[in-house]
Image 1: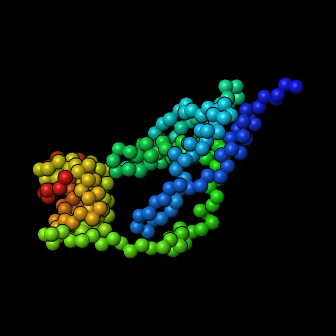
Image 2: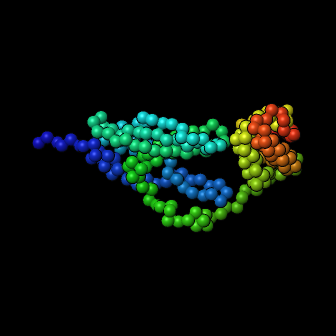
Image 3: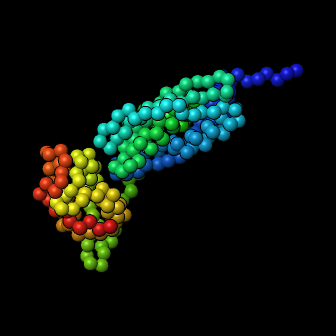
Length: 242
């Protein structure tokens, strides 16, 4: 008796059965934000094995940037799931935010991840809509902030609120088109490394940090007023450590 060939529909159902429920494998913890997530790597690894077993291929056919808002990028794309005979068109959207050059890649990662999740009805074993964000925060044990020791010259670690102000101002400066601060070039990458060192507990002169915040704010305000800045801001950038 000849074995019945699986239909395209049956192959898709088989992928759903093989993948089943996926456990969230990532964790984000920053300030009051605390949540777990299912990574693109976990989804792709699980779905890829099932697709190969069933002789199915999933590939992108269209991709476009829908819009850009500051350091946010919104994308939309289309994919095709096929076994060479039957096929299924999939539409998906993505959103990515980054102060550097990775916003587009984050958007595409999210776009591909949710195309898979919705197509194969991938469950994670919980439903975040059942619990309010405030409850999730309250249920998460709070850890005491790490107290970095003073350096030999007596400098103290930078306060978290000042780090947050600098991060926000650097993003504003990029969005406003700041090119110069006084006679010095505005370099967001240099600021990024500096801020990273602060987050890791490297001590700096508190007075210098406060003055830098004030001067960066002046440059941002000037750029917003004249559209683009070329040495026009009444501010002088302090020497930023590399």
